Image (cartoon, rainbow, N blue to C red):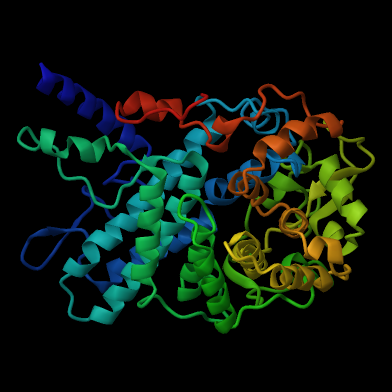
Length: 506
């Protein structure tokens, strides 16, 4: 009876997973258990030669360029619209819940993100597991180590995004074996993996990054698209700032190592997101502040710009419907109260519209950090990491308040704001609040705000009060509580895998 039940589950899962996010077969990929090559001895292999390994590595990089929904579009929806920075922007049933706190397991955005993240993990695993067995003498040991390192950084990046969204997740680091009558019980857990704890996931992320560091390519100041040692350092700094693996000494260490790699604040903030003088191209790529970015050029532009506002090189294209991630009145007020004109105008722009979901049509605000199809999408930048260093200095057992304040002042003075006052600089709680505000103004519309509130246990305090003071926000459906720190696991995943448990509160 048990075996028959397992057969039924596996057959159902094979159909479901293979159409969505199979752990060992991805229909979008060039290499899988179905499309394996044949080596000279007639044996089935995943990669026949060096060229196929390199092609698959490029497939990983292409995810950052071509599949912008889950790792960028939805991260902004969660990081900004699910915080006090923005409204949903559109009243669509799948998007509005991120504003009014009514997200459920049936939400299609959650399903898309879960499935696509696991597809990315499967791609990385395919290279990590198989590269050492490729029978091609032209593929050197050093190249195998580097390609594996890049794939491990990619996998760590994906797991980091997932664990911050959902907490306990399946920690998949292998390729599932073939299902036969003889192996079905043996491979059952590979096809229906249990969730690992949040701490176990963070430990795997840490392990991947530390193992990758010696072999990953070094930082290239003229090409910030690569999964380099510097990307690993940035990720480690972010990982060590998060509970339950906090280590503030290491946050400081890896931030300092990034400075040694040549990273620094770009002198002119407008270089980060601006356009050239005639609006025909991005103002700059590969700035000294950018750690990892996806780059776009004529003929292969990013499409998310028209999800957020206008494409300045194609001004009227796709501007007939309400956009996502509309700046909130509360954020606009924060910029105005601070007198933060530079970051305000670089982050928010106003256009006339044909819709009035949140503002009058004559003066409607839009997020402005992606303003054309040729702007880079910056995944990690140095200002984020530098402010995490300040956070670590404030929160560590022996605080360094003056040094932390100096970092915050450095970020402020870049945009012509005055230094923090003495009363703020010498009070730990006041300085932490100043740091949180600075991160909000500096990193708005970069998908950071929600995760800052979660990391610093500020969700209930900030989010349950903003609905009363922000008159443009849709009515709150559920109050934020301790269960709100994790988002719902897609119900379709739970239906397919009996080993997955829904997060509390959903």
